[in-house]
Amino acid sequence: MLDALEVFTIVVVGLMVGVEFSVAFVINPILNGLPEDSGVLGRAHGARMLGALMPVWYLTSLALTAVWAVAGRHRPGTGLVVTAAALLISSVLMSLLLLVPINDRGKTWTPENRPADWKEQKNRWDRFHYVRVAVLIAAFALLAAALA
Image (spheres, rainbow, N blue to C red):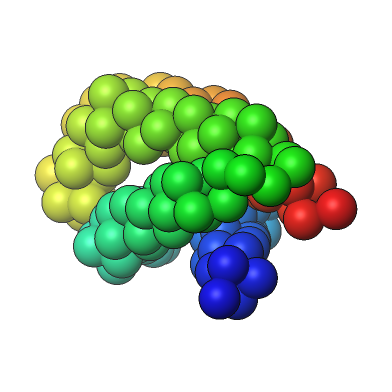
């Protein structure tokens, strides 16, 4: 049963990392290449859609990792799982403190109502997101290493 939990956790976390990586290195560059009005609308839609989905995914990933750490505490690699859980906690905190406030503003933006500093806010969100992606990749790598 623990083996199934480990594999399921790796799949859930891996897919989440893939989505966040895609946002950073595929979706946002595409939106940035569109005319400003289209890019603003695309980012606002993405903020609404992913803003509803990702919190559940983050918390599920963290919960699965925590269960793995407790259930597998007698196995080698538990330290890696605990460290991965700590990184996932830090990604949730980063999201809540740094990214969500910008995201909450951005999801209401239209070409008519965007603030004067919308590009600076967009760029700030992107920089924070790059750091969060790196943290998530490290957590995923630790979980994968814990299987060995």
